[in-house]
Amino acid sequence: MDVVFSWEIAFQLLLASLLGGLIGLEREVHGRPAGFRTHLLVSLGAALFVVTSVHFYQRFGNFSGQGPVGVDPGRIAAQVVAGIGFLGAGAIIREKASIRGLTTAACLWVAAAVGVAVGGGMYLAAIVVTFLAVVNLIFLKKLENRLKKDIYLRILVWSDDLDGQLLRIEMVLAECSMEVVSMGIEKDILARDIRFEVDVRSRTRGEFQLLTDRIAALEGVRRIRLE
Image (cartoon, rainbow, N blue to C red; front, side):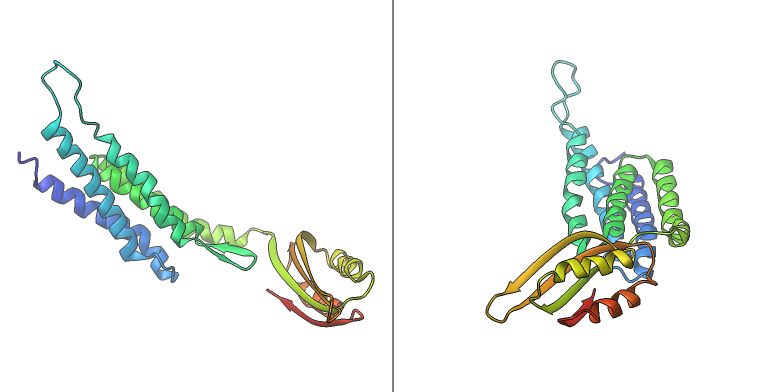
């Protein structure tokens, strides 16, 4: 059999493309930046890296038994694992008080693993992982949406620099069942105004309108914005 190229290698590359594309298809439907084509290419590239690594091992390894083999086929696969982290990091976006793209980054990581598995001839394992990943993305997301989760919110308040204003805002937050996660204060001495930036956590969105009305009713408050 030709170690440079064979029907088995063609099958491996096609299977890696198919499985990676299936994982990326769900991301594509939900409008994520890394979608069908990205996942397909990640899986295909990972498979090619492993196939190439095996070829180097077969061609340049020392199998005479008189010394070390000299070529480690696992090195390239290890670099795939490290390298995919950079691509995954690019898919993660911090948006105000929340972070998006973690699932997409994880999908890219799994797609690379599927490609490595296919390139190494572990076809059944790659198919099972792809099936589990697609089930997780499609069906477990519906279950996740039904769970009662914490809601994070950033509140910006522009106010006159009045004594005890921070305490009054904190009291309103407590009355509306908001837990303060972090807080920042920006004070303009010349203009005698102050801006509060508060990250809060809540269990329900129903209190947001009440929170806005109560803070807006405080003395000295000029403007409020929820993000």
